[in-house]
Length: 333
Image (cartoon, rainbow, N blue to C red; front, side):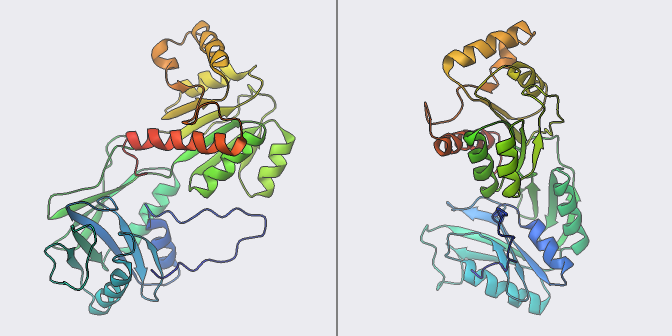
């Protein structure tokens, strides 16, 4: 596919990758720059598919594109057809693969994929959706596939489990806010988790009392807030799309922090330390009035790789567990 044009980032800034599961922010930015945009959506799957229902691409009249719908089988064709749709000024629903009239375009999976090319979606709607997502509000767009009319629709609750759906004539595409990783701690493991999460597309929020981590993460261009001490009651930004990870070697002050996280809507809480350390924190939380139904939310020792000692391994292990729990709740991972 045509690569997305990007400006050069400052030398000391870690640049996050494009969000392939949500092309709306990029589409809105292109519209702001005066581009014409076609939004291409996977609205039907007959068989299997490398991408889920609702997978999208955004294509501009000048040839830029973001997102992907197949593993390279269709992207070039999608960009070319999007330009033809723009030229005609009419939306189009196209079947590729099984049952398609385009027999020269072969899908190795043997499935049939229905793609909706939308060149008429109101730019104001796309910008409104982007702005809501930036405010960490979930968004859903309902599209009448026959008439080509789209509107923002109500999102039920604040659960990541809302999924895209179609009845053949109407398609509803859900957009949850970006996954956020709330990190509280210190040391190399904290820094490794923050950097890996950022480059993996998470929104990252770091709290640390450690001068070395403050300086290192600030140099990387990551948002970091100074804690006066481990139990400092700093403002923690939490919601249903936030995972919280506590990474302290010394665990004094940790029960107060964990208590605040247990009272929040975060979908995952992980805490560094051995099984003995976790048993001690569990006892402290019981004494503070929490029962086992609350405490079981805390993963300790955290991560999918047992007894991780290397900071990078611990970061990979922890983020893998976070993504596993996000996926179990229906988040598109």
